[in-house]
Image (cartoon, rainbow, N blue to C red; front, side, top):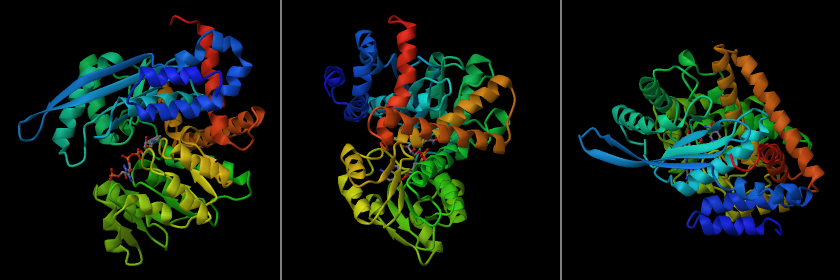
Amino acid sequence: MKILQQVFEQVKTRNPGEPEFHQAVMEVLESLEPVAERNPEWVAAGVFDRFVEPERQILFRVSWVDDQGKVQVNRGFRVQFNSAIGPYKGGLRLHPSVNLSIIKFLGFEQILKNSQTGLPIGGGKGGSDFNPRGKSDGEVMRFCQSFMTELARHIGPDTDVPAGDIGTGAREIGYMYGQYKRLTNSFTGVLTGKGLTWGGSLARTEATGYGLCYFMEEAMQSHGFGFQGSTVAISGSGNVAIFATEKATEMGGKVVTASDSDGYVYDPDGIDLALLKSIKLVKKGRIKEYVDQKPNARYEADCSKVWSVACDIALPCATQNEIDAASAAMLAKNGCKAVGEGANMPSTPEAIELYLKNGIVYGPAKAANAGGVATSALEMSQNSMRYSWSFEEVDTKLKGIMVGIHTAAANAAAEYGQPGNLMFGANIAGFLKVARAMYEQGVAY
Ligand code: NDP
């Protein structure tokens, strides 16, 4: 990096102790160097310096009472990163690992992802270090209500529209939406991922996993292969993983793995989707229960080993940095031909380097998993119209959006001199629209 090196140095100085945020910014700025070269007026207007600084960062106390009557205190976050092309939009993560660095990296990536969908949504992200695992429904409800009591004053259907993420599913969105409605006396599309009888969109639940498969099929077909007849390794067993498994199977692939943070299962006969759904969605159990019903399958109590399973296509759908250099090397050695990121930033920079070096078709998260937020934006449109589209209508729009994202990333990669590098292309395609809007809107907004 030449022109943008000092932007990155400033990010490190200004945001000490935030490694995930640094990692995400560095990867993007490296891709944007040729954009800076071609657009000196953007450099002069400080577009790049402004782009890496959130418009607003909100940190707040979330106190709630557990089932024993004890007061618990968590920390709430909402980073409203960029509103140049629309209201802030991005999920709420509930996980003990949540901190400002993680929320900022996610919010930053979200700007580019949302831009690529072609829909008018800015970038943001939020959450809390609250751990929903092992909590009763009552505890989760009291936490969500307390969380929303503070968040409500900062969001709105034309300002900031949060959604789900790790740990925030339909139940949590329901409790939060109920509290928002109570506080504001309004029924608006302020959250997405809502229940189908109160403003939710059909196909939202499936959208990230389905969209990932639509995107990867496009990417792989341009190299002469696809899901048909391929062996697929998938990590995670949450929302994204389950519906990626469903769509990859429907498209002719054989998915052989599923995991959670305790371990992974390998089923040589192909993952039994009905069983996976019943364990994870109905019983809210652990993935190791899968082998109780499937004698041919095996369980290993180390989730990182999932990448030692031989596959043609790997779809990491669990969490950030889950594929490091060693795992990437193992994938390459075992003949993996494509990696598509369902999770956000699941590959370390060293892993990405290995994919590119080994000619692995690489679908970066900010393009490949944009189907979820794209469908959230479609939910916002339906809420504004007070109308609902059918599952098929939403799914068709989703497919069109994912194909469009692939085309835009592939074209930008070629135009800026790295044909086939979809990460490079996605960073540029997403950035151009936001940068133009920031430039045209002037400095002091
Ligand atoms: P869920 O909470 O539904 O599922 C997360 C899954 O990942 C769980 O199976 C969880 O297991 C597992 N997991 C968590 N940490 C680890 C780990 N260290 N190693 C292995 N497995 C782990 O979340 P989602 O499916 O919604 O999200 C998954 C990823 O996709 C995240 O990166 C999220 O940001 C991203 N994403 C989600 C979108 C959505 O629409 N939901 C949209 C775009 C991106 P356990 O039960 O043990 O915690």
